[in-house]
Amino acid sequence: AQSVTQLGSHVSVSEGALVLLRCNYSSSVPPYLFWYVQYPNQGLQLLLKYTTGATLVKGINGFEAEFKKSETSFHLTKPSAHMSDAAEYFCAVSRNTDKLIFGTGTRLQVFP
Amino acid sequence: DARVTQTPRHKVTEMGQEVTMRCQPILGHNTVFWYRQTMMQGLELLAYFRNRAPLDDSGMPKDRFSAEMPDATLATLKIQPSEPRDSAVYFCASGSPTSGSSYNEQFFGPGTRLTVL
Image 1 (cartoon, chains in turn purple, blue):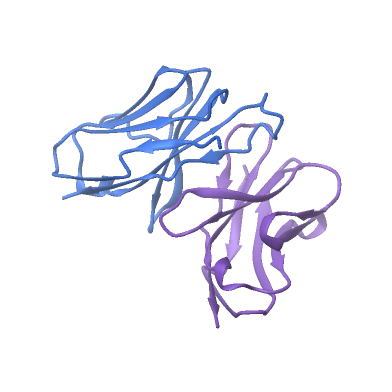
Image 2: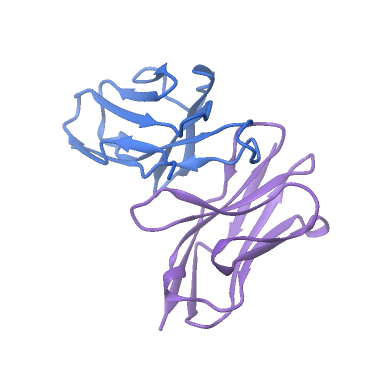
């Protein structure tokens, strides 16, 4: 069975600081991995995805994530946080199925 | 600009009333998902359809919830009778293996915020 664990339900950073949101997955087969972002009162929007190939994936808004099979991780990073990055971020896993298994989400706060 | 649309955006109703939520998937997408989001449970998949046929509704309480796709441009989620514990945000998402993107890349609508008093 597949599952996703997001460490830290809340993360706070200062504007300009590094953003690191953690995601670990459990999958019996090589997974597809996703990060979605949800802004207040909106639906989820795809930030980036890993399916095959290069393990460092770049997404929208300056975010990137690295698939590390040995660590079963897919952490999301951004070198310099912006106020507009404040949102909830969801990691998700899937493989050989239409269904996405979502983590519980991490709320990112950015302070000036 | 292709988007998933959902109506209504907000719904307040009294316990026992019927609630119908509607979703228009992105034109050409043949897979539609219904999710429920609450603080306690997070994002839960209720049901999904491929080419209008239900593939999985195991996440949906069968006694009061029903989901249908009357045609390719409309998906509905109905609760009858509604209960206060159904209060949540309900999201529709669509996708397609023929869209050129990963077959399980899902595009989400803005959600319907349901409050049952």
